[in-house]
Image (cartoon, rainbow, N blue to C red; front, top):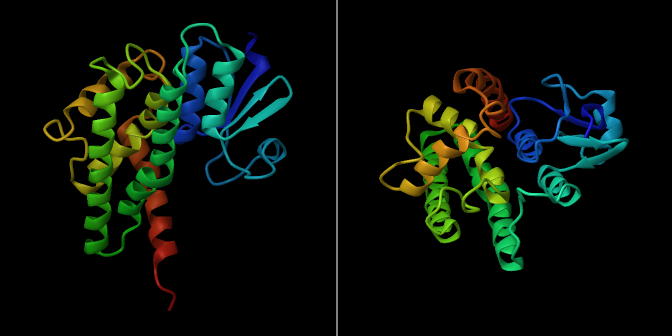
Length: 232
């Protein structure tokens, strides 16, 4: 596949963009990464995703594919050769999609709530919600990994990508709040999984450095807290 046949519109700090890039790396597909300027939207992005106007967008030839998990599934279906990303069994696919939905709709918004919290009580409540979610994901990992390194078994798969893309932001949240969320005592499986996920060849070159990501987080946190502040 020629690189110019596949393009990814995105920005390096975005966990959702990471999903597309990791999937392409797993399939050993060359692609052109078109970096969007932070805080603005290019004309190509607006043309490619006129509904949500958001990254990531995968452009395959002249066809745009939007939404990160839709992109992951598209890549796996168009290039079905090994290694596969989605589980082969329908039940396992349904389970992986369930947890991916939970992560996007419940868990990550709770983690963003830590940064957005104005009062200490609200911050503690958000931290507790994130910790409870990690306990649920620890249990899911133990059940779906079947004693192996990843949610998908021996190799990175759909749920690994769906959750693992947030590890950079999880580290930044820990650093900026002086807390430990991935606890080797409380979530030993996830702690080991996170280390192996970040070290994987498909991931390590697209996982943002914590210090670099923290600078972006400071800007986003200021905006979140500003939006939540009462008007005078």
